[in-house]
Length: 222
Image (cartoon, rainbow, N blue to C red):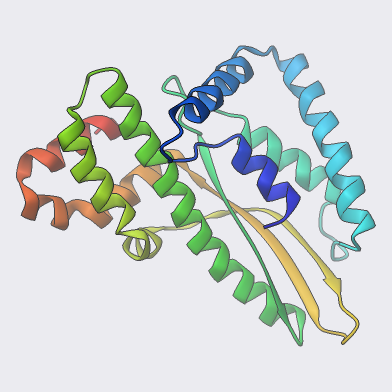
């Protein structure tokens, strides 16, 4: 995982037993939502400058005709820092890189891996949202456990349910063997991500009981 991805994941939910970590992440998101546009732009600008410097030092380049790396990163972070009232991201990001003998092959493989990574990010966000409803006493712990178990077992189905993604970053570098390594970042609309999850786990939840599916619909806002 690149440092860029690590920074973004740090701003996302990590579904784990560490409840204090989730609490801190929610606090961070609340603070970001409160920032004025000027303050948010200043924050993004600072991160973008640091990331551009690091990636350039590591040899990452952009193809002629593509947006400069700093402009691409600016778009990434501005989208990444958008949250709805439940602190669910308005866009969920997936990232991956791949190496191949030519650019197109490396890019195709990277996009495939990024979609799989995106499915994992969707799982993380949805399960954290479910956990939050338990904390707010909107869902029982027993029902939440069953729904989360189903969601976490459905990564492949979620990946298959993902529709058109938004390309937000693309860069490359050439290694000593003259092979291309392409790094891509894709974004997915939150509502479409929730629908992909709903579609992926519907059948399994119906088998466990219709009420569970209704509970998930309520959590996701359907």
